[in-house]
Amino acid sequence: MKKPIIVIFITIFIDMLGFGIIIPILPIFTKELGAPDYQVGLVAMSFPIMNFLFAPFWGTLSDRYGRRPVILGSVLITALAYLLFSQTVNLWLLILSRTLSGIGSANLSVAQAYIADITPPQERAKSMGFIGAAFGLGFIIGPTVGGYLKSISSPGHVDLVGYVAAALCVLNLVLAYFLLPESLKERKPDAPFNFRVISGIIFELRKPVIRELLLINFIFITAFMIMQISCSLFWKEKIGLDEIQMGNVFAFIGLATVIVQGGLVGRLVKKYGEIKLLTYGTYLAIASLVLIPWVTKETFVPVELIAMALMALANGCLTPSITSLISKSAHPTEVGQVMGVNQSFGSLARALGMGLSGFIYGIEYYLPFLVGAAIMFFCVWLSQSIQPKPVVENQPVA
Image (tube, rainbow, N blue to C red; front, side, top):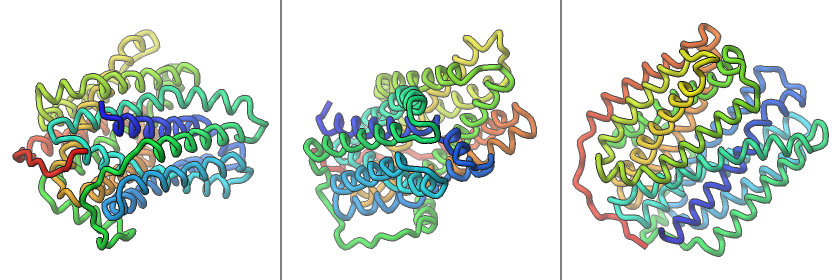
């Protein structure tokens, strides 16, 4: 594996480790600061909303000035956000820290564009899979570390959590500064960039193939977030799991994601191709969502774990294939911009899924999973409507 890909893997892993450290303690800490239940969701949504707004900006900026400076700058912003988080004593500081963190961590599109710069098209899905593996690994370790750090922090404070997350970002910054060379050979120094996120999404949705890929990603992320939020409620209220047991299940999902995206994606792409994997991944996600709500305490193991493994496999088929196909379909000088739109559109899907999950779950506990499965059927039609294009070696390889 090329050294830059390893550095990008470490960069994404540390990003997600810091994110994973925060996530399990954020709702508890928000309520400790005196927030009612509805404000807990609003604070959590500040992160994906900033991702939505800034992902195209970072992506376009990287097309203009290069990937390396954008990665370094965004990681620095994230470090400052976690340092501010360590000093949080009221809701306003908490919202500010999560807002800054959402801005800084909206750099996934730049990391994906970097991978696209240095890998030939036939190897791109495999390389994108390593980014997914970094995500999963961060989510395995992060929640456990975050819960422990919160337990030994001062009552009503999260100082140790913030310090550790900030230190990880500083380590990330140092590694990227010394080990990550610039990947972009052809820049657009005169290209305009702005915050017109909606118009950027509409512009990309007008392009064949990219339109279908963006919509598949949006629908899958929406269904996944509906599932993720509803699972916690379902497992606690209907199955009787405690927080430690639920953490173990989420760690299992992360481990399965690492195995699939780190070890299986490359082989699956060689055997089936990315477009077929989109269809297969959609069917796997539907099967997982339909299976989840019908388990009992007695059948939770192994049935629910099988359902989670199916979802991890679905994610492994869908996400790397989508990003790889987008990078191949975009113009060489607009890869970062299109990846940014994809990430931004995905962040909007996360916010939508978070908002829908609680409402649908309140109607009937099994409805969120069935609704998620129902909307995933639209992805079957979208994936089958994509016409494969001849591979053009339009990306310089470092």
